[in-house]
Image 1: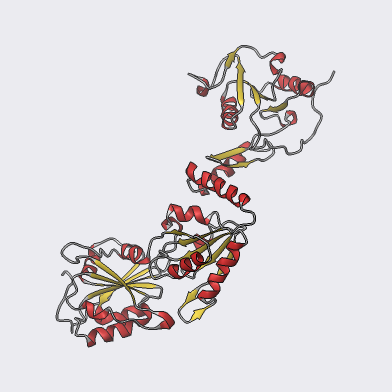
Image 2: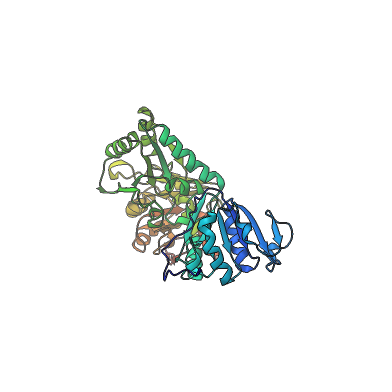
Length: 439
């Protein structure tokens, strides 16, 4: 009887990654057999290996499965759900193919697709996350190449993250008629590597994202494809949604059972609206989770090489905002600069550079006090402009917003520090009698 398979091209059948544990027989103990054995063990299947002698180092030493060093016999397939021939013996493959239906097993023969009921995929695993790539047996090496590219794009996770996803899914199923979850997420200065791990975990659970203008594109790209993205940016003078509308949107989506993320640049507790939003949700019976982020005042100092708490130059740092509601200028902090022993970090100051310079002069504060704008943090156009308090308006012309303003003696030492991005140092005006800069 002719037992040679006659199919010219078998249909694509890939071994399911969610396959329940099966009894697997692997014939052979070479390099190809080692690859198959590892894949089977990762699937928690019961494995037995039969080979004349182990040829691959993987099979040396103590093994978590029985290795029978002898000739294969056809009766060895009895009771097996899956049989894998990794010997390269075509005659054995044909014999196994002919008996597979009567014996009730699935067959895979390495490099012989015509004798396969299924193909192994190139798989990358990270705890409960499994991504498989298959070329239908055409080119396992190409599948492995794609698998490695996918693996390089996947961020590292721990078991706790996947357990949280599982728990979140169970909670959603249990509260089909109840509300969802809201995360108020600090997304840092812009780059994805500056996200906290918790922020990254929450981003990838979202079904709806309400996104501020200062959230970086790299961060937005991490959202699930199915996540609905709503731009709620509120730049000065340009406001798409009022705060009341944003609150209402969060409440609407969370009451519909969705997982909602309110994405904010920097840290949500630093001059953000997190208090108004969290308090609003609490009043309506929703307990949001606050997720911290790296604030621009920290990342900006780091990018500009400015040590804000440098010993003998600054006893500490104070963070203020030059911008209040309705584009109102806040100058209450300017008198502090006179004989100020700390570093002052001013957010949202770029548009008010001229006013700050004029008010400081009116308060008799030295125009020679070192100052720096750090602009476009985490953006390709990131720029640090170093000058003096008396040059703020000119400094602002050399960079664009968003930017932080750093004022104090510690700024002078930035010239001795490494920095990232472009740096511009303005010549100090001759009118400055005092000089805080090192010669």
